Length: 235
Ligand code: ADP
Ligand code: MG
Image 1 (cartoon, rainbow, N blue to C red):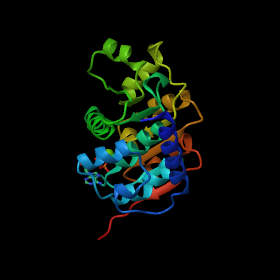
Image 2 (image 1 turned 180 degrees about the vertical axis):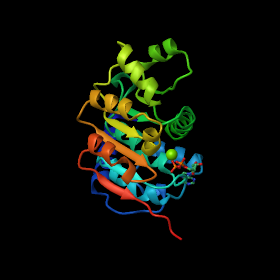
Image 3 (image 1 turned 90 degrees about the vertical axis):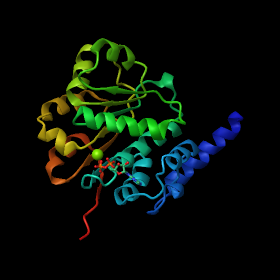
């Protein structure tokens, strides 16, 4: 496609995102890029869950959010879609360095999130990596510098930040703290504080948790003027 056409498409998308202010039921009706829409469709994601309806269009605008919804409510796509889309609209390329960092409490959850990221990001050209303990440290370290989106566990991430000279976080646009209540339950408070403190201040942060109250201290440290989005259970 011609460069000019692409420019125009991106500009239209940007305008749609900034003027978007409604809650819609289907992914198809959100202001998303064609590669993301196609991948969602191929993966049979059609209707948005409640947290996705409320969180995605807000996060697309670059706002910080605290999203609270119980386990199984679809929080993963609520942050992965904005992560991919916000980098796409900024024309992020594999040469632009680290754009988004996603922190998960456990290796298993990080792997699941990574799988979903690969599934819905597969028509985009970003590079994505998984940084979890148990893998070969050197191999992980050597791949770090080339990644646009990283999914990681807190301990392993901090180890790389402390030790790897080629791990540059200065271009970071987005930080996601996923299952933040569980990260804290597992005793990673100090590790998280150390990570957050060393990241660029000008960034978008999305914090997701099953409850709002258990993460209020972390929210104060990491979020800037956030939208509080919570989904309550219906009887
Ligand atoms: P949470 O993080 O809130 O516990 P997940 O993001 O792990 O929830 O999603 C739970 C399950 O629901 C996953 O199997 C996921 O594939 C599925 N899911 C998420 N969003 C949708 C959707 N919009 N349509 C259908 N299934 C979905
Ligand atoms: Mg989850």
